[in-house]
Amino acid sequence: MKNDLEIKSVVKEKYSAIAEQSAAQNASSCCGATSCCGGDDVYHIMADDYTQLEGYNPDADLGLGCGLPTAFAKIKEGDTVIDLGSGAGNDCFIARAITGDKGKVIGIDFTEKMIEKARENAEKLGYNNVEFRQGDIEQMPVTANKADVVVSNCVLNLVPNKPAVFKEIFRVLKPGGHFSISDIVLQGHLPAKWREVAELYAGCISGAIQKDEYLSLIDQAGFTHVTLQKEKEISIPDDILSQYLSPEEIAAYKSGEVKIVSITVYADKPESMDSNCCEPGAGCC
Image (tube, rainbow, N blue to C red; front, top):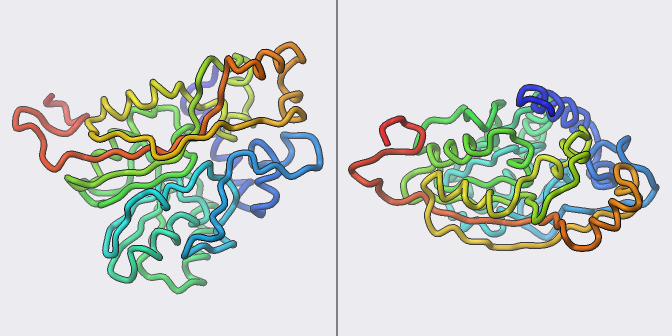
């Protein structure tokens, strides 16, 4: 089993390669890098259609999402929005269409090539209130109580220390702020060998955790009004499954004992903290 640093290295390597590819290339495989899967068909396995949303820019859409968090995020004009794992900037530009000139959008991404691509896209669009920062979302390069809204699209499943990310989201949100996050979770136990496959880790599946555990982490970080805004089951085509599983394992997967699910989840940071306590992770609770 890879340690956290090894996992991050795999993710950075894979997403550096993905940054150089088109949305069509990324959508054609389970992991974004076309070398990992066989077959010539294009599968839009996880991604939802962004093209009808105001602010959509095809140059910023790498086809890597598993939901439409910005469409559910209750963003208002003038808001400060942070996008975790901002990639080439797709969700940031859609958020900017809602916040307008009075708002501020900050994208954070782990991969230098993604940051470069996003900044190029922002410059082409002439946006001076959309900023991209390279950093680890387990330790965000953002001051506390900065954002009205945090969004993220199919990114937290890639992060080894998910509790740390939710604590960081809590820290950077203003009191009364909220998040809307799309992510991949599991129901039932994924075959162990999938967790050893680098391509599937970088492609969101092997890094996913159980749905109940995921929602519990949100509660433990101090959020309230946790709500599932959308939920859909992901179906993996046979020619992808056959790259990793035996016919018997494929049959077991298709029996319904294991489900790979895309969720979009919303939660609030309370307006005020209990006077006897403080923010999660601060060491005084």
